[in-house]
Image 1 (cartoon, one colour):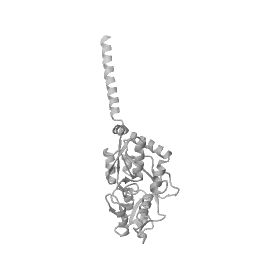
Image 2 (tube, one colour):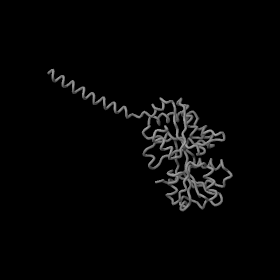
Image 3 (cartoon, one colour):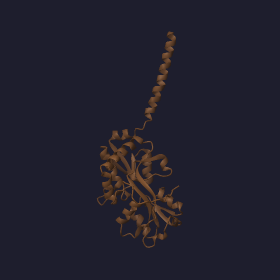
Image 4 (cartoon, one colour):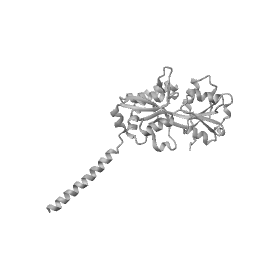
Length: 281
């Protein structure tokens, strides 16, 4: 009996050790993304610094913009410092995946392969897509079908460029170029069209009135929303950011920032009905 008890005790210890080890391994694989941010007391945010009015430099060489200012408001709400790192679109996505940035703030939506590895915060902007063309001749474009053989400008691997190429456009790619370069190239015929977010295009055209380009009227598609881009595994951080965004929406901060940059509250769904959907795949 004594030997049997010793054997049972020994077996219990082995089982307990297995259970504790399993629990320990489970704990080590927990999502500690928010804990890491909380410990360093700082949010590191990837952005471009060239996308007006989401992320750009003003006349005083200060990084501002809708996404930038919302990220700053989130950091303030969470009592954190904030640090921005600048990359092109691919660089921002890579920085988030590698953990070099906690999230990316640059008018991000999700589609295709990116949706498998990343997630978005709750929406900070609702919009739809449009096209910028030359004022003189609409770049010969009256619908998406007219994109065939046109020269579409944009950064590589974006959903906008994929849509343009899907309709037969020739891609002319840029690496983190400024809006004036994009618009000037359309105006002088180096390119024909830019597909992008309607509100971003509206603000860009208004900010550079001497460049003879315009948004193609009534050719709108892909009602959408954008937010901050997270690695899909970092759900505790995303939840904390979402909670802060909910508070900022409730107290009117998002509306105030939106109206400052867009002249309208883009943090709520637009009244305009946009039914046409175009896939980038």
